[in-house]
Image (tube, rainbow, N blue to C red; front, side, top):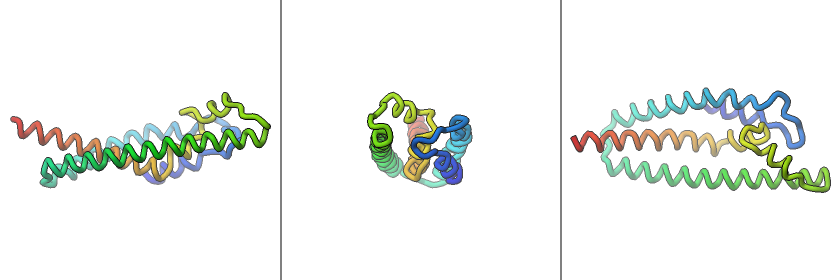
Length: 148
């Protein structure tokens, strides 16, 4: 998984460069989604093999959720900082800020934001999200079994 995040990170062009033939990292999103599902399945298998109390599961869910929220907030701040950096570079080069251009190169599908989507923080978010989903599935399965 790490090599895919790293390769996607490397596809980010320098500010001011054109992206060429679109965003190749989009092609790897399907692979990342499949790996996410496999990772969730493996976490569930590991968690089911262990005897874990419901209190420990709910504690794990809480901690993982808090970590994920903090990571998302951090990533959002980093994205806005990067966007402002691009605007300042544009102002230095052209004497004004073309916000329409800045918005277009920082849109979801743009290759110029690959470093924002594929970095160490987002990799850890990927792992945390898979753990959180696995913990929730195991927790609710155990809760449903105890009701029967």
